[in-house]
Image 1 (spheres, rainbow, N blue to C red):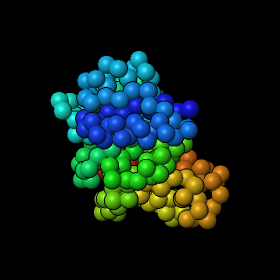
Image 2: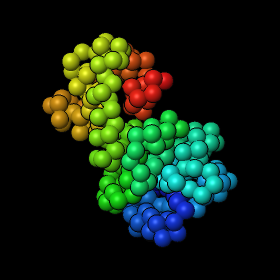
Image 3: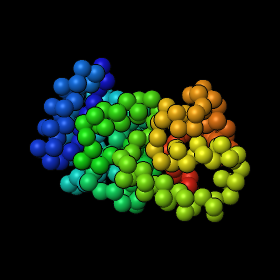
Image 4: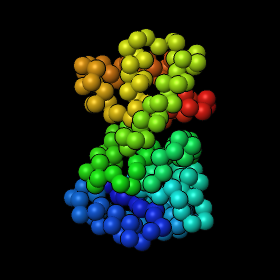
Length: 208
């Protein structure tokens, strides 16, 4: 059983998410908060594994809440749920420590798929968001000297990472085994001096 927490100021949305999570046999909602301030006070006590976080909260924003929450619970995984799909918000949330970014209109099955993906070390994104990330990456890739260190195959995999696909999806698309893909990922991370998918995104978007 995976413990989920929800941070959402809309009571209707918050209660809907809570019901949806609790109806699943694999997840349970251990805490539902209306503000970032409540989340920072209550979540360390409940210690959820996954947090579904609204980006636009009254008072402290969801982005700032993620950064502070990661200081209190370093291992917690945060998936942002929002109506916004603009690149600045996306990358601010990722830089703050979010593990994924989904639009609120995403279907319930996509939400649960995103939770599973986060648990497996992925970085789920809604299609519209992934396209924005991928589009920016294509614009920046030629000017980023570190990308030139990668082989053709590694660049193909890097494109798939930036587009938000899971290891299983990438392996299927490129017709390689997951084991082979993991070897390629280690080489990519080593050449780019990063340790995760999120760091790859941040390096090419923000140069960090």
